[in-house]
Length: 280
Image (cartoon, rainbow, N blue to C red; front, side, top):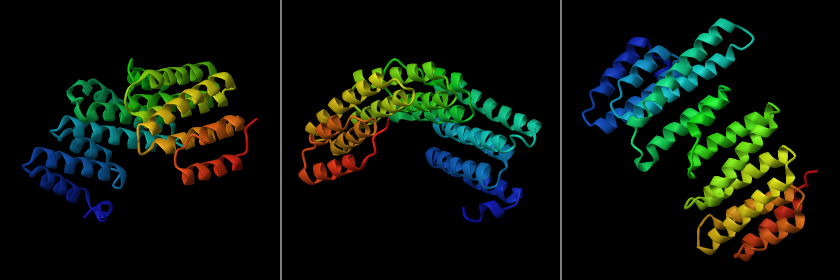
C-alpha cells in the first residue's frame, strides 16, 4: 500500500485517511495517521491534505510530530525555489513556519513522559535551523538542565552560525552546551559526544584552548563511563582520542586511547589515532 501511495489519486488518499481514521484504538489510529501524513506530504506532495490529516490526529505527540513533518517538507520545498520563484518560496516558507508556530504553541499539551515533548522540540528546532531561523531555534531549545535533544539543536545552530562567520555567537553556544554536558547527570554517551562536538566547533572557530578543555572534560567523562561498565564507554573514549589527534594533541590522544580497558579495542584505537592527520 505504501509503495503505491505516490501513484494514488487524491480521492484514494482521502479514502485511506478515512480508513485509518476508523481504527478504534486511539494510539494505533494516531500512529497510522502519522505515517500517512508523512507519506502524503513527502511522496504525494499534497501539503494541504497532509496538514488536514495531521490536524485530525487525536494524540498530542503524534499530531505535533506530524505537523512538524509537514512543516519541514514545506520549508524544504520552499528552498528548492530559491533563485527560481521568490513568491513560491515565500509562500511555502511562511506556511511551514506557521505550522511550527502552531507546534510551539501546543507544546504544553504534549506529555513530558518518555521524552515525547523533548522529541517534538528537537524536531521543530532542527527544522528551524535548516530554515535559517536560528534565533527562534535557540530560544526553543534554551534550557537550564542537560537534555540531549535541546543540545543537538543548539549545536546545529552553532555550526550554522560558524558557517555565517558569526564566530562569537557560535562559541557562546558551544560553551553553553559544554557547560550543560559537564554538569549534567545520566546520558554519559550523549554528554561525551556533545562535549566532543562543542570542541570541534570551538576548534573550527580558532578557540583552541576551549576546544582542548572540552575534550579533556569529555575524556574524563568517557573513562568514568567505561569504569561503570557502560557498554558504549570504550567507543566514547575512542571518539575523544581521535578528536585529540585531529586537533594535533597526539600524546594526549595516545594517553586517552591507552585508557581503553580491552586490549584488542585499545590497539585498534591506537592504530586509528596514528592514522589521523593532525589539523593545523
